[in-house]
Structures are given as C-alpha cells and as structure tokens.
Image 1 (tube, one colour):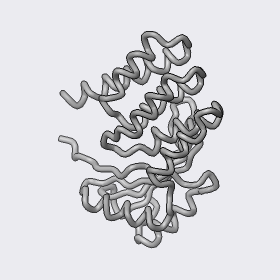
Image 2 (spheres, helix red, strand yellow; image 1 turned 120 degrees about the vertical axis):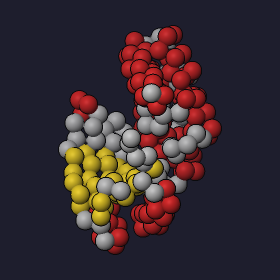
Image 3 (cartoon, helix red, strand yellow; image 1 turned 90 degrees about the horizontal axis):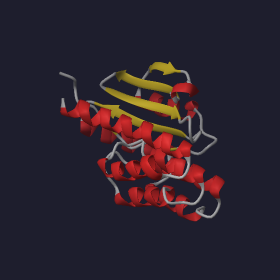
Image 4 (cartoon, rainbow, N blue to C red; image 1 turned 135 degrees about the horizontal axis):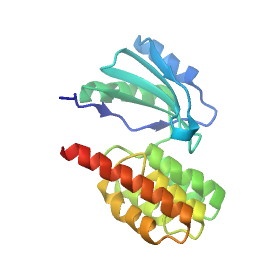
Length: 201
C-alpha cells in the first residue's frame, strides 16, 4: 500500500528567481539538500532541487519546461506539516498570489504571445483542489482564435488533474481546427484516463 502524499500549490516565483533563494528557506528550516534532477526537455522533466530531513516532508524548487517559470512547493505525508511549511515558504519568498496569477491572464488576452505564457502559468499555479476561477479562464483560452493559445490551454490542464477538464480536453481532441492542438489534447486526455484508472484500481 502506498502512503498518501499531500502537496501545497506551486508558488510561482519571479522570472529572475533561482534555486539559491529557495535553498536559503531550506537552510532556515534546517533541511539539507536531498537531491537534484536535471532538465529533460524531451520528456518535459523540469530541473529540480529537493530539500528535507527525510522524504516525508520535502521542499521543492522547479523550473517548468513549458512556461520557463521557476516555482517552489512542499510535499509530505502529513497534511498539517505540509501546510505549515508552505506558509513559511510563502512568507519568505513572497510568490505571485492566486489573484495576481488570475489577473495576469485577464490583462494580456489581446496579446497572444503573452497570453500563452499567462495561460500556462494558470495551470502551473493552480491549487490542487478544483477552483472555478482557474478552470473558467483556461476554458476561455481554449476557445481563443489563436492556435498557440488553445494549445497552451490544453497543456495548462496537465499541471493539476481535475475531472472538470475532461470535457474541454475531449472537445479539443475531437474538433479543434489545429492538428497540433488536437494531438496535445489527445495525449493529455490519455494521461488523465490512465491516472483515473490507476486511482480506481
């Protein structure tokens, strides 16, 4: 039987942030470096650093491959300890707030290049549990006239697995005018079904 793991939301840091800033937080917690993971663009594996006294409570730093956004988050087996460490992390690093992530997407809807990044950051910075504000904005991006924005909306659904995204992904997979958008949606939808099948088994 696998131990259930809890996680904070991913705290989006400024584009100029590096792992050094998060290592300072780990030092204040008294948590040594547990390991690192190099970036692998082909498999969308981000560059990562991990700190903790054990694998039961871990502080992560990650540089997302698609959005190039640095972020930090906490995982662990005790939900309360994860929440406490996450609050400390948030106070130390002052990451983008939920409202700032939402507002950023609203502000650049008419600038396709910037909107792509903002939509990816919606997915990356979304909370683990369903939030209608994020879902509706990603859904709106999925109806955008620009292919790259719709593709970003598809990828945004891959960061947090919410069943509410399945109809959106199904529609993109079946009827989007762009082959690359359809292909991305099909791949993500397949990963969704695999995850839900594993949860039920």
